[in-house]
Each structure stands twice: as structure tokens, then as C-alpha cells.
Amino acid sequence: MLTETVVEKRCQLLGKYIVKTGATVRAAAAAFGISKSTVHKDITEKLERINPSLYRSVKEVLDKNKSERHIRGGEATKEKYKKLKLKNEKFTES
Picture (tube, rainbow, N blue to C red):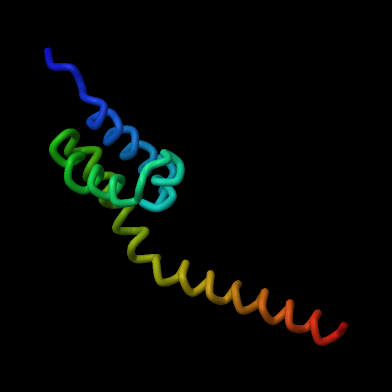
């Protein structure tokens, strides 16, 4: 019986984490303390070979996150300008 490598374990942990939490690649990278490129390579290339069924589940989450990306970006921009407006209003009142 072959033992599972550290990379294979990491790929599966990342995949399970993303499926369970719905995390983005960026959020998973932060949670595991590794780079976004490492997460992306692990879950899009290596995981498909290691655990195809988990890969399919992860792909669904990633596709959903990708389709919602423009919404999150728009909300972040809206919040940024809202804060700037409040800051400017306080500055002009002083």
C-alpha cells in the first residue's frame, strides 16, 4: 500500500475546506498560510488526479465564486466610496 504524500494530503484538505466553507482561492490560501497560486494549482491540477469526486465538488464551488466575483467587487467598491464620503463629510464639518 502506498502512503499518501504531504502534497496529496494538502490537496484533499484544501478541497474539503473549500467545499465545506465555500471559500475562494484567496480565502483558502489565507486560512492555510500558503500562496494563492499553490492553492489554485493543488485544486485545479493535482486534486483531479488524486480525488476526482472531490475535484468535481470543488470545481462547482469555484465556478460559483467566479460567477459572483463581479458582485463582490462591486460591493467592495461601493463600500469604499461610502467610507470616503463619510470621511469627507466629517472633515468638512470640522
